[in-house]
Amino acid sequence: VFVKSINLHSLVINPSEVAGGTAATATVTLDNAAPPGGVTIGLASDQPTIASIASSVTIPAGAVSADVAINTIVIGTTTTTNITATQIGASSITKQLIVDGVNFNLTLSKQEVVGGTSLTGTITLVPPATAPAGGFTFTLNSSDTNLATFPATTVTIAKDNSTATFTINTLSAGKPYG
Image (tube, rainbow, N blue to C red; front, side, top):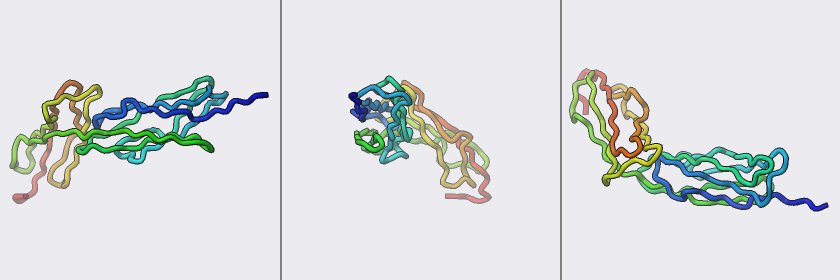
């Protein structure tokens, strides 16, 4: 009786370089078809806050590969992340994913406001560029939620667009601030 071994053969990341805020795909491939019950491969990112991936993927019985998404966030500086696929009790493979920084400007409709009023923020991609499929999503945070809040926690520059606007609500401070 000849028993075929089933081993992790390859890990391919496509594309291997993405703009922050866009996704890549990891394809995990075995050297033979998965047996009944499938084969589970562990997955990890060394920088999960920048490039996140499911903790594992199961290659179903009879298949030799499976795809899983790698989601990235918008960042200001290009960063290299390592994605690792591991077959329990066997080998592991690590490949790099380059997450490019997204350059943008942030402008406000007013530089000074009276507490209790709103203003508009605009995010513009630079140099003149447009967002890819899926767009670019930015997380909005206030350093002092007693003074300024956002009705939404994110804003997205849609595909083929270069700007997005969002509202900032100010709260009455009782005295000049800043």
